Structures are given as structure tokens and as C-alpha cells.
Amino acid sequence: MECYFIINYINYNLNIKTIIKIFKKMGFILSKIFGDLFSNQEVRLLILGLDNAGKTTLLYQMQFGEVKVTVPTLGFNVESVKYENINFQMWDLGGQSEIRPYWRCYYPKTNAVIFVIDSSDKERLDIAKQELFLLLQEDDLKGVPIAILANKQDVEGCLSDAQISENMALTDIKNRQWAIFKTIAKTGKGLDDAFKWLTGILKNNQS
Ligand code: GTP
Ligand code: MG
Image (tube, protein in one colour):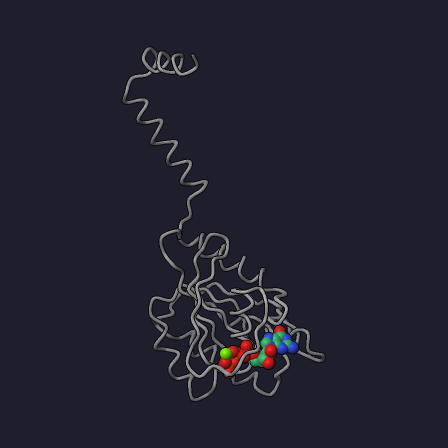
């Protein structure tokens, strides 16, 4: 009965072109609501930072929601992680000084960077700063947004995000979107904020 009424309504009140238009519009609205700008593509995310900063811990925390025991990364680890409908292809590169020159091999086609800092490693903050500003000059990372993590916030006497920001002169970063987050990769604290910010930036840039 209901179907009969709808068919009749369509027959008498709408011509076929209008019906097609409505269907198209519905499809557009539905794809806006349920679809995802990155549904068919992966976001390439590099996780960089000095050795022992907590990069691999972050990777496993994001993938498994728990920490595995990590060993120093001699090459790289790569995992796919879905966050807020975005498929992140996360590249965790080893941070030892001998490996750092090879980071640049991974820069092409990168969509986002996470730079992890051990907030308790005050002695090497200058080296972290040097490495950060080096990668910010790379053509292959031009304009790529960067989330800087002040990690290991659970360690007593560690530097705060404000202290790290000041000591590393982060406000000198003018050529891209950036933000600093306090994190404890070991427990996952703060990672959500960083990924929320990143996904927001990526979605904005895409639309
Ligand atoms: P490389 O692979 O050598 O570049 O180091 P990485 O940056 O991958 O460091 P990794 O994740 O292996 O962590 C190094 C050590 O720091 C491990 O013992 C972790 O358990 C520890 N760690 C990582 N994140 C935290 C944190 O938020 N708090 C504390 N207290 N320890 C952490
Ligand atoms: Mg590692």
C-alpha cells in the first residue's frame, strides 16, 4: 500500500530528472556523513626523534593499546593504525646517531610527522633541537604538519612542555602547522590529544 502510494507520488509529482537529482544529492550527503576523505588512501606518518625517546613505545601503544618491551630500533617498524577513520601508515624510524642520516630516505610523500622528545633527557635536548630543525628544512617535508611530543612526563624532574618549547625555540617554526603535547607513551596518556590535533589538520588540509 505504502509502495503504491510512493510510486504514484513519483509518477504524478516528480519527473525522472528530478528523482535522479534527489538521489544524487542524497548520495552526496550520505558520503559526506559516512564517507571519509581518506577512506581509500593511507596517511603516511613518520615518527622521528632521538634514540630512547619512546617512538616504538608510542607505535605499539597506538596499535595494541599496551606497551610491549621495546628494543632499540636498528632499522624501522611500520604498522597500519586506524584513528578516527583515517588509516595511518606509521613509520617508526630508529633514532640512533648512525641511523639518523637515513631518515631522509623516508621523507618523500609524507603527510605528517610526530617528533618524540624524552623530556627527562636534558643533556640531549640541544641535539634533539638540531635534528628537528634539520628536518624542518627538508624539501620533501615542506609544509608537512608536525606534532611534537614532550614524552616521559611521568619521570620525576622532567622538563615541562613549556620548558621544552622555550629551550628548543619552537616558536621559531613558521613554515608549517605544529603543536606540542605532553605525553606518556608508556601508558598512552596524551596521545589522543596529539592524534586528534593531527587528524583535524589533515582533514582540514584535504577539504
Ligand atoms: P630507538 O628505537 O633507539 O630510536 O628508541 P625509541 O625512541 O623507539 O624508544 P623506545 O620506544 O624503545 O623506548 C625507550 C625506553 O623508554 C623504553 O625503556 C621505554 O619503556 C621507555 N619509555 C617510552 N616511553 C616512556 C614514557 O612515557 N615514560 C617512561 N618512563 N618511559 C618511557
Ligand atoms: Mg625504537
